[in-house]
Length: 162
Image (cartoon, rainbow, N blue to C red; front, top):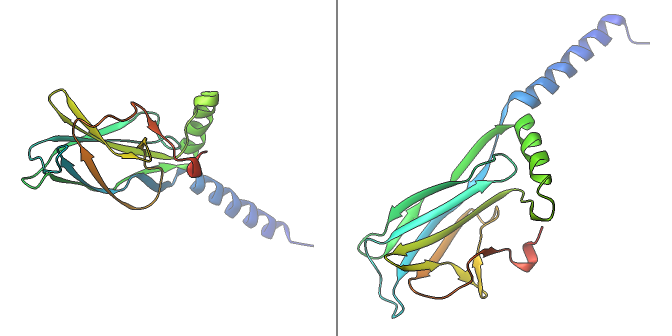
């Protein structure tokens, strides 16, 4: 039979482990490294075009974020990876709150890019749908064509449906 002092020690270390799990921040992805090229419909690169990366980790935060950058002379722009550090208790609360969205609930990281120039926009369309990154791969490359027509809402690829 374990001694009372051993039981106290085990309870103490167990309690400390639970506290650490609830207060220590856990890193996770918000958005990948993303290289974007913006072109016109003839395939010519477009300089000085605004490109917006929109991102949120629905399992760790309740608000979305945006980063704006302008293309260089070759029509290219680079976005660095984004991470969030949130403790388990926050992730648990945010995920529970997301569940209240029912059929419209979202979980995990979600990011997409859009180019803007005057009244023209360009989105990352793949397979006839707007592409939305959802956790992998860690590096994305997109070619956005200004003035192309694609659906107005990001779609989840069928093989990545939640």
